[in-house]
Amino acid sequence: MSTKEDLINYDADEMIKQDIDCLWHHLTQHKAFQDREPMVIVEGDGLILKDIRGREYLDAVSGGVWCVNVGYGRESIAEVVYEQLKRMPYYAGTAGNIPTIRFANKLLSLLPRLDKAYFSNSGSEANEKAYKMIRQGFRLKYPDKNKFKILYRDRDYHGTTIAALSSSGQKERREGFGPFVDGFIEFPHACCYRCAFDKTYPGCDIECARVVEEIIEREGPDTVGGLIVEPITAGGGIIPPVQEYYTILQDILRKYDVLLIMDEVVNGFGRTGKMFGHQHYDVDPDIITLAKGLASAYLPLSATAVKKEVFDIFINDPADKMSYFRDISTYGGCAAACAAALESTRIIEDENLCENSRIVGDYMLESLEELREFSVVGDVRGRGLFAGIELVKDKGTKEPASEDFLGGIVADIAAHGVLVGKTSRSLPGLNNTLNLAPALIATKDQIDQIVDAIKKAIEKAGKSVF
Ligand SMILES: Cc1ncc(COP(=O)(O)O)c(C=O)c1O
Image (tube, rainbow, N blue to C red; front, side):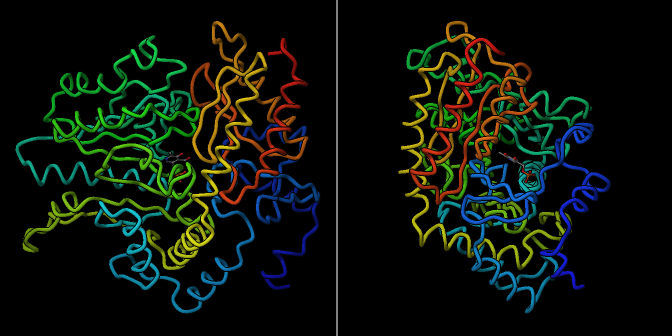
């Protein structure tokens, strides 16, 4: 039998057995498979997934980790990938190739204030590239300073590799993996529902942004090179900062010549109702990192896009052999992945999916607002097709519901045929937010189905079981 046939002809029991025997699942305690089968996904179309037992689900988190932005079953993406693989599968990123050149051009046309795109394979890697650009770049620019430190925000996540994890404000995600890389400094989150300063907007003077100036002064401005944030925090609990937040933050960063990296890995490519999450704010990032929706996860691809001022630091006399950006990524910007990204982006534009994300997203948020009538629903937050529902034991004290309680709710929603996400072993005592990020093609009917399943699960869980 050919490999092609193997992909579509299989014995379900045998596949499950081999899965348990051979495959190490991400973020999974394998002992659980003594009591239950692993989920094996075999087909997808639009928002609908089918598992190996023939069960169908409405996927409300775009591939589990908010990335299949254009939905499943896009043959046109498969076709461009096939054409490109036949023509030329690979050559190193020291050379250009047609889809990579075209996609860099397309990406920068969508981000007109940025000037160069550097490709890699994952969100973690895109962020690592940004850190390396800042460390090496500032050493070239200011040989007498050492602006190597990067500030990161509590509750934000920037990836799984050690430097990306060193810059992630999710203590449970980090646990067990230290020691971490030097030079990554945390600053407070921007979640109004649990204000780090016990204040209330708008009387708070946006202290969560202003405090960054004190931190830069404390660390020493000549040692701080960058600050990374997700425009709207994703895995840390879907947190859109207030409108003035980024303007204040950027003014501080400019004063100290600190570069602003915006991690659009989740927000980017329509998720929040605009092409990029930062476009909701008056802010002008120096570096933007992208992955996930970049190629709608049809193939792995990430990008670190930078302003001319950043790129130009690396334009020097070729005789100085150390002054170009000395970084490589074997698969970064692979031809077929860029072809997939070009086609995914064409779909987002031609089908007006940012607009759909905004309109259907507003509808989703309005429908979720109604859940506030339940005693366990403490807060509802989001933008576009990107929303979080924070569950609490007590609305008055805001005591968070337990992660087990959320686990039960998520399982019950799945039993109603809908897959939703949750903050998962990320924030100690605060893994209490359900996450929604359906594909950008979602319809209002599908949103009704998702909200209805959540409502039923919360009703079933009752008021007292935590
Ligand atoms: C905001 C953000 N940045 C970076 C990453 C890391 O991306 P990857 O898993 O592709 O390395 C993630 C992953 O979920 C993310 O949510």
